[in-house]
Length: 531
Ligand code: ISL
Ligand code: CA
Image 1 (cartoon, rainbow, N blue to C red):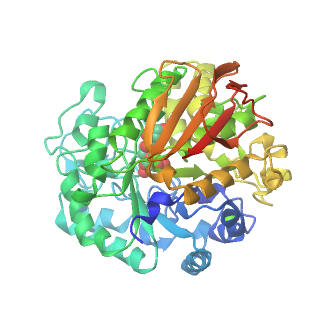
Image 2 (spheres, rainbow, N blue to C red; image 1 turned 180 degrees about the horizontal axis):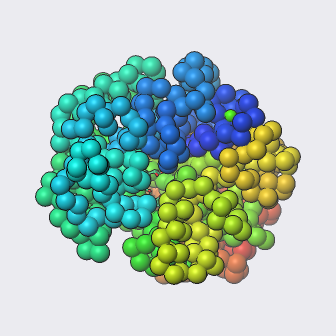
């Protein structure tokens, strides 16, 4: 069926933190197989698996040593084949992570095919995403190589046609194995301005984000590989604007099906630096999402997400992870899942997992966090100030083990987990998932409604109460049918006229609906009208 992914919901698994089957403290493929019932029950259609390829784990698998081998920590190729077989038997599709902006420096190509990488006699001033210069000197070659991420992640040279063909061959190999699509890591960074000019304050973004040949490369990849299979593709694209997104996802142009934008994830940031915090202003979020909903309505397609393995937990970020954790987790879910696009649920989001606060920097594992901490300390920034940013934005917030039950380490492992479990696993876990009031059941209902109601896929989006700083409200419309979604992003009680239609879903007992609606803290109510 064409465009099956427009009615699908994706669930992202970060394998290292999902389920450990053998007690070594690291999640693995057999652990995922054990939990397929759980995912099937939730009703999701596609599983996006963060990288499971052989890797020295400088960046938890986003530094790939061998694209055609499974990481020992995660299991074997036989385990992988069993996973895909079992998933397909249940009607679940598998989206692999494709990391081809860079490899590990331990990839065989880095020594045997140096022309696959980017070398210069002199570095420019570009800074790496993970602190410090984006260039590293190689003693033997007496040149610098480019690494936009860690120095163990050298960037591939997409100008080289033989390298591109090698990547396409590897992609075909996985597709022939039966995988159903790719999430493409920082795929809009693959084309660099070949003059390599310095950037303002070391920010080279303008010379490699949505670079000169990126659309040529994606169209070539589409011709050579993607178009030959019935698959789903999503490009992760930091720095892509709406006009870029239209180009990347317009069906006529044959590039990718959808992209991950970062715009809405930058709204609680005061400068170009993610650690520089600022409270979210709700109108900023509303106007931004409205803009994306409108712009991609008939040309392109949105992906919808609050969370992934790089972002803090949404209930701690735009919700309230204390008194109103359950209410706000559901409200945020409704707000996202009634929009147009393909929604993504990140592991643990469906049970309202929260950010974590470790006292000591030693308990953190993420290279981005650790490098930033070191750099800022050396510049004299006080420990407490840095920790404050890490608590709000650190990627390890998303990477603590999945909280299955109230036992030690939340039932993730019987060994010692590679990163400590959030102590709140004793109360926040999957044990309540059969309760009608659980966050899990709320997500399950949203996934089900998307499959049943075409209006969620096709309807026009209109923002209501535009200027209101507390409520995010909108309608979705097709001829003869309307959905009205109310989401209270605050602790205040709000009052609005009652929209027409039947109650479809809500997150409080007995929502008020006598001519007006009174929204309690973080309340969400959705109405459905059919003429
Ligand atoms: O995580 C970020 C902000 O905190 C981003 O800068 C992130 O590094 C960027 O979005 C790219 O992310 C992807 O590629 C990285 C990897 O570390 C991330 O986990 C991955 O999602 C390098 O492969
Ligand atoms: Ca394990």
